[in-house]
Length: 355
Image (cartoon, rainbow, N blue to C red):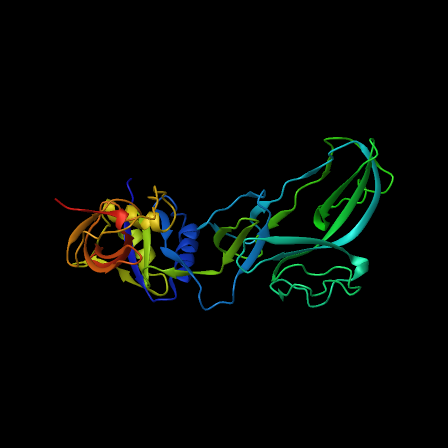
């Protein structure tokens, strides 16, 4: 019993409630073997109306778990700093609370790091993003002074661990508060070379969004831009089903279902090429994404020219170029999907000439 894909027409904005109603009815009637997947294709776009997203500042040696363009959900692991290991045998002499302040020059070429004891009390105005001038005090006791013009990029509470080594020297370790274990790291405790002193700090996403990774000479920065979903075909739902009178009636009688997309009163099944595009856009079927190289572009296409799409969700579709964006190296191609002309924005590397 081979299922085919069909299109249900409903009211824009009610797509998900209709989908849930169909799924509940299918389950209640035990019709799962007749009705398969129900898909509402969406695209992810950056929400320019929302407030600015999140920012995470990392050291150059931090291990990344995401890259630019990666979609993350709240709680996903973004990156982790290296773990802290004991360099030489010794005894812990002292453990103090300090504040790590990193100031970066406006051109982002140089940074200066300060470890200020909490007892010295960091100035209240020293916050992330604050602009500072050379000579400005960083602590209330005036002991720590800013040595360059720049902006605060890190303001973090840490533990300063001082170890007297066996050869009469001293080693200093700075451990993020989140990784500090007071049961393992305390004054008078003996430590051995290679011993794990603390796990590296882990960074988790505080909200869902799209990742942008920026690497500077002295640090890495992960930004998460808030996103929102936009339905690609408002008012339409795609359903995989074995079509007969019983299944047709099951779907048609669900509240807010207007009808199947039909011809002469008969529901029209989607073509395999159209099904593949829908599943890829919904993230159900994977496809190989063509890398976009930054090359100088000499456009060889014209508005009105017919091209074939060679990669992406609409691979093998044929369409007509309606717009050309030279600066972004993009083409807007009009493609026919279930009888409707749909605009698709593509990079020039994703299309090819016909003939």
